[in-house]
Length: 216
Image (cartoon, rainbow, N blue to C red; front, side):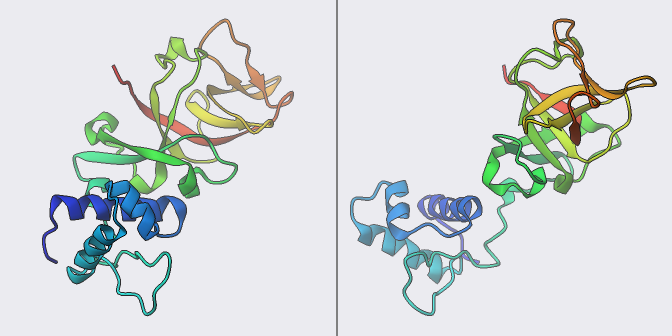
């Protein structure tokens, strides 16, 4: 495929990202606004160049949202993991279903060195990232605002730190523990907070925390 100019790459990245986030391609006017063009003809010239170089499909008929990326151009190297780095999708919130299927909740990506995981490097297809909120896990070294890399799962060993969805629908990060008398519970790593017992407030594990990344 022909090499793109910087302007063409910017436009293609927008079309790819908008299609991924919204489920439909952007309109020509939306592309025009993103590129800062005052004339729609400038955006049309850009689209024609991308089609000529094989990055956009040629539509059978004129549609409002016909900016479809070709199969060859669908892959974005900037969003792919490598042997040295793991690219993790960041979620703005925890959805009701499988976090890995919540494309509409993704607000960006986190790139981490695979050396942080030792020999047990997770697959990019099984991890997501969430931003920690509050101080309930400060004694475990998790601070407010930290990005947590989480492996999606519904079960985790006792003693591990997990992301759990409680009955209210909210997500929380706690240590999963089991008491012989009271059963499974979520233990905070801060004495100012109380444990959450499954017998009193039901919860479900949606992931196990593998690592964190802190922005200074």
